[in-house]
Length: 190
Image 1 (tube, helix red, strand yellow):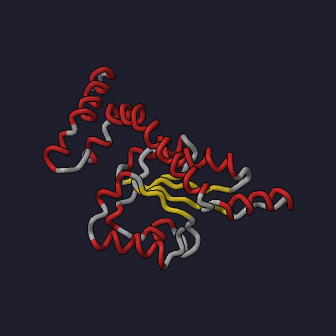
Image 2 (cartoon, rainbow, N blue to C red):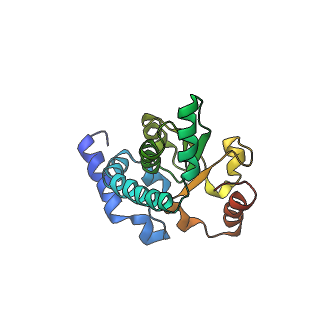
């Protein structure tokens, strides 16, 4: 088990075979997500997909004017030598933070000087080391627990955006849907 070649091969097998998908209808178990060999192959393969999908989504949002306010605020802040307002984004089921890396690089391009606070929330605690190496905050969190703003210690209006990736397929119960609805309706998340 301590042999790196074995760990890598076992991780690749978990990634390819997806034993939990066949047995339980979920892609991988938390134990499988936490396996170092699995994480190696996951980062190697999924990084491109999740980064690219996020970048494409950001381009569509920008084209529709969603980020105009941030571009204007960053420009005004630069002209007046003040700090731009903080843009807080939380990635639910964010794993190793590929989406957050795309967001960081995209905003550096469209709104230089924008202040970003990027947070990855995930059920698998071992993603923390990767998230922090990228310079982002990690919070171990289960979407079924709800109370996202409370978990982040924020008030309504302080969380700008929520990114929900693949984990959305698990958001099928009323409690989770109520939380997501509340984020948009009551908590002023865009």
